[in-house]
Every structure is written in C-alpha cells, then in structure tokens.
Length: 105
Image 1: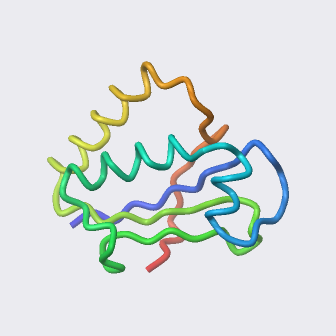
Image 2 (image 1 turned 90 degrees about the vertical axis):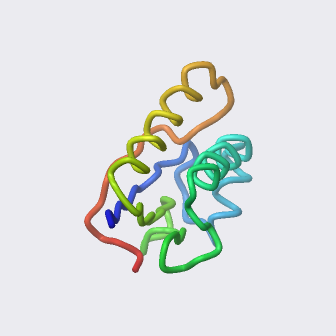
C-alpha cells in the first residue's frame, strides 16, 4: 500500500468554499473528469474514503487529494496513463501540482 497526496494550485487565487467551486471557476471540469477516470479505470475506488479523499487545503486556496495505491504496479500504471493523456490535453488544468506529506487520512 502506497499513500500519496498532491496539492493542486489553481489559476484564480482566492479562497474557495469547496473543491467543486475551485474546479468550476477555473474550468477544470474536463481535467478533473479525466483524472478520476484514470484512477477508477486502474482500480482505485473513488467512493471508499480509505482509498481516496479530496478536500481544500486548510487555507482554502488550493485543492488536495490523497490516494492509496495497492502496489507500485498500480501507481506506475496510473502515472503512465496520466502522462500519456496529458500529452494531447489542451483544456485548463492546475498551474502547479506538488506532493505533500500532509495526508487527508
């Protein structure tokens, strides 16, 4: 089991009420859907709060996700799929992503 948390920095710098607002106001709908599809297609149960959780950061300026991968193979498959899909992706996406040790669970 591998736990990974990422912080996503949006284009519009402001405090958000929730992730849905951050996604909507920054036009990240297709990016968000793509990431969720890749995770789901590779066996991550997005409805299981012990495997996946998303929230805003404590200051409410960025979005965060924590994912639990069952093994290195799954994590590598997801990273490869994201890399492949992002090569031709032209829609809005966060301006910066970074890993965090502050897991959501």
